[in-house]
Length: 369
Image 1 (cartoon, rainbow, N blue to C red):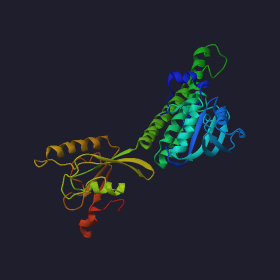
Image 2: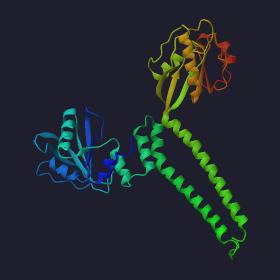
Image 3: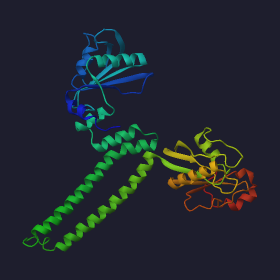
Image 4: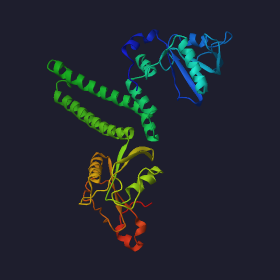
C-alpha cells in the first residue's frame, strides 16, 4: 500500500501537486480533501472568494468554496495549510474539511482537478513523506500497520514498534562497530604498541567475543518476538477439531455471535472449513470450524474430502482446540486419536451428564462457561 509511486511520477513529484480524499468514501458527516505540492496554496486561493485571506499555518479558517471556472458554489467548510517542510509530506499541504455528501465531495474534487492538480496514486502522500525524509522506512511500515489494524493489540503494536525498533537496531549497530574497531586495533597495532591492553590481545578478544555472543542472544530473542508480532498482525489461526457432532459448530457460532456454521444432530454436517475473523481479548483470531474426524464405510466422498481439509487446517494452525462432547460418545481424552498437537481441550455438552459423573472427569479443568 505504501510503496513508492511510479518512476515517472517520482521523477517529477517536486513540481507536481497532488490531491486525494483522505477520509472514507461518501456519504459521511465530514470529509477531508488533501493537497500536497507547490500549487496547494494557490489552488486554495482559486477555490475561495477574492476577499478570503489565506490563514496562518496550522490555523483553521472558514472558507466558502467555489468552482474556479464556473464559479458555482461548492460548500462552506474549513481550510488549513501546513507550510513545508513542517508538514506530513515535507511540502506545502492544504486540507479542505467539508461536508461528506457525495455531491459536495465530487464537486470539490472536480474543482481541484480542473485547477490543474493530479490525483494522487495509492500511498503517494506517504511516499513523498519518505522521499523527503519525514518518515523512515520503519515508520512507514508502522503507519501501514496502524491504518490496517483491526484490534486494540494491533493498534498498540503499531504505535510502539517504530521507535522501539530504531532504538534496538541503533544499539546493535553501536555494539558491532565497537567490536570491529577493537578487533582492527589488535590486528593493526598490537605488535608495536606501548598500550598494555593491546599487548594482551586475548583479553580484548575475550571481551569482544562475549559482547558478540550476548548480541546474538538479543537478536534471536528479537526474532522470536517478531514471530509474536506476526501473529498479532496477521491473526492467530485457531482450529476447532474433534469428532463429529462434538459441538464445534455451536462453539464457533457462540464466539461469532451469529450463525456461521450449520448446527445439526446428524454427524458429518460440517463438510467444508468455515473460517471467521474474531476479536478475542483484543487479539485478531482466525477461527476455523472443521469437519468431524472419523473413518468408516459410511463416510462418503464429500465428507472424506472435508476430513482431509480439516487435517490440513489443523496442521497449519497456531492453536489447536479439540472439542470433546460429554454426551457419552467421546471419552474425556478425546477419541480422534491425534492429540499430540492439541493446545486446548474444550468439554462440551456437560449438561447432558449427571453432576456426580463429571466430578472425576472435570478434575484439572481450568475454567467453565
